[in-house]
Length: 429
Ligand SMILES: Cc1ncc(COP(=O)(O)O)c(C=O)c1O
Image (cartoon, rainbow, N blue to C red):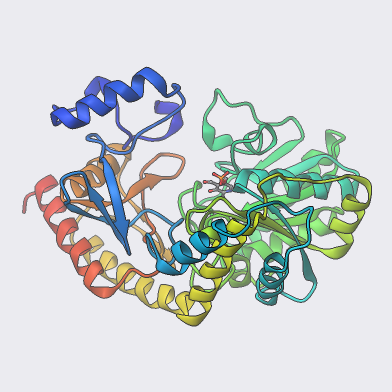
């Protein structure tokens, strides 16, 4: 588990005494679920229902969800529940029939993108969409090499996992890959120089550059909203080597970082954009948005049919999500509430050595701690107080705070009270 960088994960070896109900579920889980699964927290939480930013356990106790970027518009949102229920009772097929909902949604979705990004292909998971975007880039360029960040996570298919060094040393990274080591505080020129070295390396090894793919918030690299403009500089370098630019918006997309798309913070227009997680508020839908020439070339030569990708029910969910994000101005709300969180955390970081650098873009917040043990202690301390966050980064020492976009000021107060109590416990004054 150490190389999985999940220091805050449940570990049966060092687990505390857990309630009988939890113990029973753990035993049943261990009996049937494969060994790949990990549970959050020293004492796992059983959840039975959810609403807004709150998860409720089997005893009806509320837990403040500050980690879940999937239910962006809030857990169990009626806009999604009703749209899905209505559609499920009427028709659920696939993209080989004519249906109008997918056209309405695609038109509305593409409106939120720069004009040149005017094509969309649907899949079910972020991993599938990453996989497809990389295939398209390789097809368009006739090259194999991919530039990724050194602690990237891009998903679970064989291809996406081979672009995911954060899965640890036992997960093999593709041969035609070069990595860029991301560091907090890095400037644009340094990032561009690192991307150039990666491109030169790929050319020297005979792969050439097919694409650079970056998560525009660098979540698994430790939450790095800066340097703003870094992705534009990286894109210039990749294009100078003939490569495509892929923005992985699975984490930052749909308003989380204060703008609809994380790449816009960097002033870059990608060639391909990968969407996922919040797109369906929990329904399995993802997409690749592309420049027409790239997906045309691929599509004319290679068929792509994804049985469940873009099904009417998932499209209905996605439409509900997009409508709420747009009508409620959630990107702006994310920016405002993100500032509340960042300010409150920065004040506390001034008073305790347990919290260090605070980095935020909208409701995507990372806080450095002195090490993985501290981060795990804070995460588990908050969990005991029924506030749920997690940790990430190469050293698992960065608190990762990422509530649903509907998170409000009263909930921020609940978080700060639990955090103050946790910090006081760990470092009594
Ligand atoms: C940046 C990024 N890309 C891709 C994925 C893969 O998405 P999925 O789990 O939906 O396959 C993830 C999932 O965490 C992710 O964080």
